[in-house]
Image 1 (cartoon, rainbow, N blue to C red):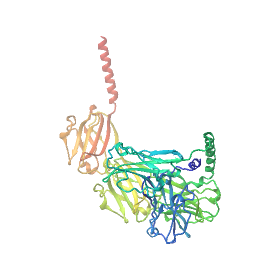
Image 2: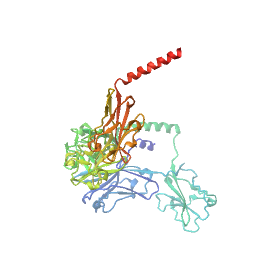
Image 3: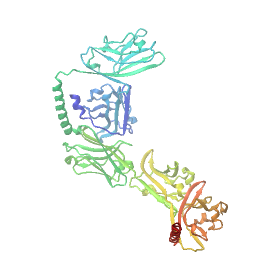
Image 4: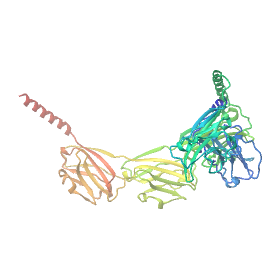
Length: 628
């Protein structure tokens, strides 16, 4: 029944700053925690929430001060002797088992700084997928731990061992060739079949199972050359119920009800995790934390971050905001309600959230080094994707990126294009453009504003080169491997269209296209009928290619001189007729890549009405002839 109550306190925890997954059976696991070098008077605490007492390990230089450690971790934890000097505060946990799973927090404490959370680690110790679980009541005659092999085990040695015991050997078969160091806890209580190696029946029989026999057992089969088989079996020995099942079931329901009530009242004793998602560009975001129980007025409320580095975000102490140790990145950006301990609203408001603000925030309420309550809030600031559309009438195109985030003066700004291929578009570093790092295609075609980090305007101006510029552009601001700001811009090129309507008869008609965007001198200009797939006019290598024209347009088309230099790609059609009515497509290509295109629809006034009347008269004549 005790297990039922404890189950009610389990809280689902999403991914934290660090997440470790290990399997039972490993010798040890390292819970990482890195910091800068710390003074010698610093005390390091590792705590696990949900445990009572919560202290897993305590470390202080040159001192072996006794502390109240949770006995579950006794003799299984250690830290580096020079941890304060090197800043490596990682914790080594020996022989991790499934019950060690949970959330671990690394703290540092100094009299003048108080309690600071450095890192949060979520440890998940998994039982191997191939393992079996055997349940048996205490007092049974024996229990069998299964292990089968389909291989011929003529010269093999079978060793059954118990995880966490020293010596770990439970049983060895055969034990003739080498001495067997069996743990005395199992002396005279284990046996295996005499035909184990012949038939692969490697089951272990354990007599009179006890509660202390519960644990993880490994069946290890090997010879002098290699390992043949390893199988993990979990044995769970439980006491027999001493009350009738009906009363036991009723008691369970009662305990569940009581446990729910207690959990609702003491919910602050268990670390809770919430998530907040917001878009970059909003004025503020709230990291919520409202408590239900009374807290002492002289307690300290501290909001902190442990990634990408340890930072103090906001502190409330002795009735005032204590911002002396606040990280510069959060100066004038944080706010808490008045008298938060009285109102029980410990929420933190963060102004101008940016991409760099994403990550886990820890709110810790403590008094005299004792943690009273705590919450983790995971903030995700999403960078909205912006779409920019451009036509041929623009000579330049701007990829916008203005931010309210605080940008370090020594940061690097990098624009890259990821589609259709990954290329470096522009780099700004050390107060100047780094043109040598640009992709050759963009050299001489990009520009950024002066002092972009100071003005917070990281927009990039491109020479409008048409379809070859379309794609996804990503701007990142980073310093020492840390991503400070980010923006994604999708550039799309729109096809231009025009309608031309003239009266017949006419000597000429002009299909217009005056383009201001950049045109390469080696490009190929082609006018064609969109509805009939016939070539109307081709200009390439500085001359008209009349041999590529359709016969119906020979000597009837004309373009201005040097169209690629002037940007006037208009086509003049001489002696137009009714058959010229339709859609015309002009394309500009370079090395078979489409750069620009334009659709022009040509119509003749009155032509459709006359065509309708002509066809109607023909149908009437046909009907009359058939009637006769």
